[in-house]
Length: 215
Image (cartoon, rainbow, N blue to C red):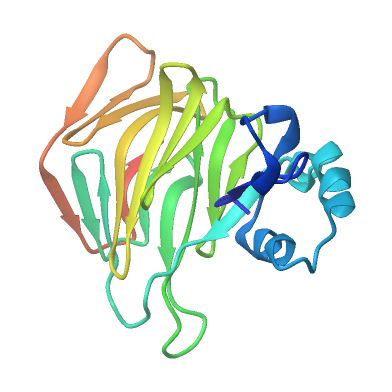
């Protein structure tokens, strides 16, 4: 899972005199609880640490929890979208979409893809379940805020879910099908060539099939 706990397994935390990374692994909260209450043996933790599941599948995952029956507001680096099905679409591929609930009282379904500045996927969302790729250099959680880096000071994406009805893209540096996107909290810039930029700030887009469509 994308949200995890640190586990000292060799030696165990109660016996540790230092934080040696060779004896520390990452466990999802469920497995960490099983290890703490001794339902999961340390040898199983060692085997998993030697061949982590998220590295085998190339991503870790988690789910956004947006309550049903509300319109979701998306703040996308200076642009505010509400009641738009496809917020921004490049050619035939949406960057971010909000689809109707599958059934009554179910939540709206958010799907999308965010890439780094080389066009490689960094985070994808499919029906509210998001996946973070292990090719990222680092992923940091600050409360609900998700910060993805491609290098030490190279931030690809800062995304902050605010359930039940808001999702905020605070920062963005992305190449999506050859179109470049750079975003801060109050400004979105788009370029076709990396030299000339179109800027948006403080705009509200309400209703419709597309918010912004780039051919």
